Length: 254
Image 1 (cartoon, rainbow, N blue to C red):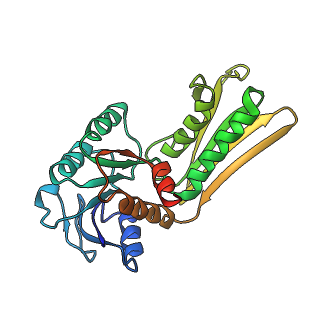
Image 2 (cartoon, helix red, strand yellow):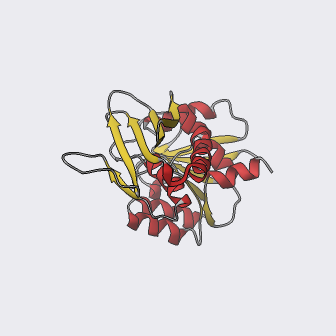
Image 3 (cartoon, helix red, strand yellow):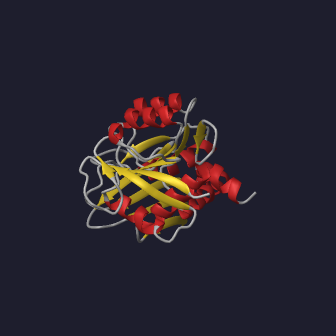
């Protein structure tokens, strides 16, 4: 069965990447899109969910947190799964997502890359082995148009490390001025913005006389489009609930 996808943010760069990846996919197809600024891209595109005529199985949302409730309400009304592929959600947004997960199948992750999710597991193991003897600093680099900082992926990586320490580490966003000696309970967060950098994340464990660094670099947005399509296929026919990449990988490797 071919999974029918409604693509939100269809006319943006990520929408274009998803459509490109779907051209040779026999198991998934984009039936229509929604975008604030519709244009001709080879599928019907509407400016509002209220205008959508086509039936779909899953929404892939590469838009923004703005209008989140509208998208979740549409998914609930039409019993569609939804892949939330954007970042920058507020605490209120996260509460809304958790509420709708009682009646909608929602796939949410800060990063759809398989490599990033492997990195997440690796740094958690490193934190368990190295413990408090090593200081943790996270550096993320993105293009100059990215709106949120630190990136959702950087926060996801920090949370993975912090799980090992029962959430006791506090996040310090950059450092400026006379800040004093670094405290043991810190995780440093540093955001770099420039040019067309797709996405680079570095987690540094700095100990006495040695430094261990785990890095991931995405050279193309296609990696995120591939992940979104995999997530959509995974989510089709799933019952209501909140899913992430760990659920997808567990199913694929079962």
